[in-house]
Structure formats: C-alpha cells, structure tokens
Amino acid sequence: MRLPLSLLVVFAMTTLATAQSKPAGPAVKDEPFGTAPEIPNPADKAKPIRPESKITAYTLVNKSGAWVKILTLGGIIAELHVPDRDGKLGDVVLGFDSIDGYLKDSPYFGCITGRVANRIANGKFTLDGKEYAVPVNNGKNSLHGGTAGFDKMVWKADASLSAHGPTLKLTYTSPDGSQGYPGELSCVVQYTWTDANELRIDYSATTNKATVVNLTNHSYFNLGGHASGTVLDHELTLAADKYTPTDDSLIPIGKIEPVAGTPLDFTKPAKIGARIKQIKADPVGYDHNFVHGDKNTAEPKLCATVTEPKSGRVMEVRTTEPGVQLYTGNFLDGKVKGKGGAVYPQYGAICLETQHFPDSPNQPTFPSITLKPGDEYRTTTIYKFGTAK
Ligand code: BGC
Image 1: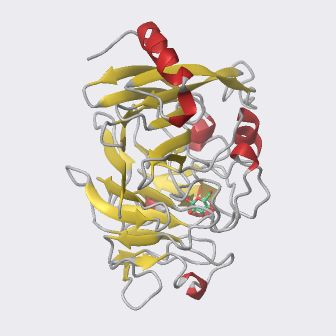
Image 2 (image 1 turned 135 degrees about the horizontal axis):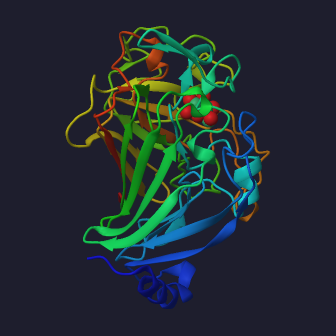
Image 3 (image 1 turned 180 degrees about the horizontal axis):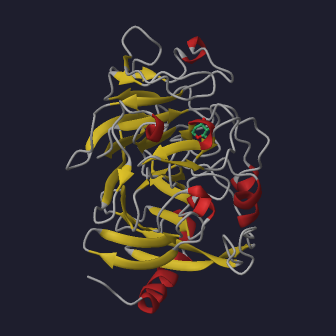
C-alpha cells in the first residue's frame, strides 16, 4: 500500500496530536528541522559541496505506536521510541533537540557514514594502479568518509506506508571526485520501521567508475533511555569469534585473530563493563571491528544481542555484512548538551556499526569494498527491539 504524503500527514497529525505518550500508527509525519548552511567548494565556487538547505524531520509511527524520527541531514536517526517491559516508550538513541547540535557538536550521532565508514590509513589508497587521497580528519587517518562525508549531506526523501510498515527512502548522488573518491556514486538508503519494532536499513549504490564503498549507520544506543547514564550494565552477545587487531591509531595491522581469552570475547553474554578496563587503549574502551564472516550473506544474520536489565529492553542486530564495529562512546566526555539537556558521559552508549572491515582499501587480505560500474552495492541491517522479563 502506498498513500500520498498529504493524506499521511493529515492522518499523522491527528494521531500525533496526542503524541509523545503513545501515538497510534501506522503514520508518517514531516516537519521542518532548521537549515543547514552551505559548505563551500574551494575548487568550484558555483558548486558548493552542500548548498544551504532546509532540513526535514520525518516521524515514522508503526502499528503499535512505537516511533522513529529521521532527518534528511545525514539520514540521522534523531529519536527512537520503543517500549520497555511495562510497555512504556523510551527514546533509546543519543542526539540533539535542534539542528545546531548536529551541525556543531555531533560525534556522528545516528547518521549514515560514508563513502567509507571507519578509517583509511593516512588518507590514501590505490585502486587499479592509481593513488587517491581522501581528507585526513582523525589524527593521520581519514574517518567516516572525510570532512564532508555522507553524515553532512542532505538526502532527498520519499516517505510512504508499505505493507511492512512506514518507510523513508533517502537518495543522494555523490559527485565524481567528492572528498577525493573516484566515480559518481548514486546511493539509496531505505529505512523501514516495521510493525514488529524492527528498524530495517537497506543500502544500495551504483557507480560510473571503479570506486570503494562501505556504508553504515552510526546510532549511539542506550536501551535504558538516552539520558540514563552509561551502558556498562548492558549485556552483550556477539556472533563473532574473531576481530581485526589495530595499531595505536586504530588502523588494522592486517591480521584476523581469535577473541578467545581476551576481553573481546562476547560469544557468551557478558556485561559491557565487566572487562572494559582491561582494554589497552587511550581512551580505554571498546572500539573494535568484530568478524563474523568473510563476505556478505544473502539474508541478514544475527550478529549482536544487547539486553538492558532495568528496562528489560533487548536489541537484536542482524546484518548481511561480515563485520561490526563495537564502539562504546569512549570519546564522550559529558561536554555536549544532548536532548532535553541530557549529559552524555563516557560509555553513555553502544554503537554497533555493521560494515566491511576498517581500512579495507589498503588491506589486501580483507574482503574487498571495490565497486565497479555495472555492479550494485547492496547491504541490509536490521535493529530489532523487544523486551525480556
Ligand atoms: C570509530 C571511533 C570513533 C567513533 C566516532 C567509530 O566508528 O571506530 O573511533 O571515535 O566512530 O567517530
């Protein structure tokens, strides 16, 4: 079923009017969320990297009244309200109340990261014998697509009600050479908020020249509620028995090693805080790529389960990707002012960024992230929310 947006808006306005507590769905609503200023293009003044743009927030409400708010800026998941064991909705992602926070202070809260998620060593890689340079924005490395990655781009949005639940289709075409990456890359990221409280993200992309691509979503989850302190009490299980060890700058050293006998072993459920202080890193915490496969699977497979004991909320992550970055908000320091004035402390969230492995373009032994003209990049990740007793 597909309804015109105007109809959906009327439907949504009546259902959301009684709002925050428990809106009835399914419904889709859109509202203005401020303006993103121009990002100038030093190489061509007439073609800014991002023209000044009005940002829209889309709210997708499913049949049960659980809801998600997504921005056209960076495809950011700004709010995600799911029930606890008593059926009470709570917002389980970190974020900001207004666009200013996302423009100024955001450590990639909720966004689509790309063209290449995570790090590329020294901001350089070689493809088909040609060397490419991408922006160095994290020590000596390039992080999450560069200084103006997909998190800062404004995506075209098309909302509708599908048979599976409300959906938001986001499209963005990244020009050839943008942030140093070759090829014009046409991307589609489709969010579906199903009636089973699954946030399904289907990514696809095509290119007109050989390039590299590795997209993910960078949501910071706290299942106790975004303002409930640290996630050290959350219990985590990962389907991965291997990981990619890194150097001090978080670039893989090229090996894939077993987690057994290390604080990274989450093959059986363990509290995030139980062994976190054993990690040798500065700042201390989990910031590791876990390996549960060596190529994409046809269907999304369970890679992570997170349980929060007080609320009883459970999140299951399924993906077609072979890896997942576990990041525990080690760099959060209570300085950014989050939604409702919330203070987000170190370890205030867990990110499970499904992906190919970091620095893949420079790592011949890792599964390739090269995309050729005529081929299609396709990947799916599902975050499913439920409760335990
Ligand atoms: C990286 C972290 C980084 C965080 C926020 C994660 O994907 O692995 O090192 O601090 O993103 O940018």
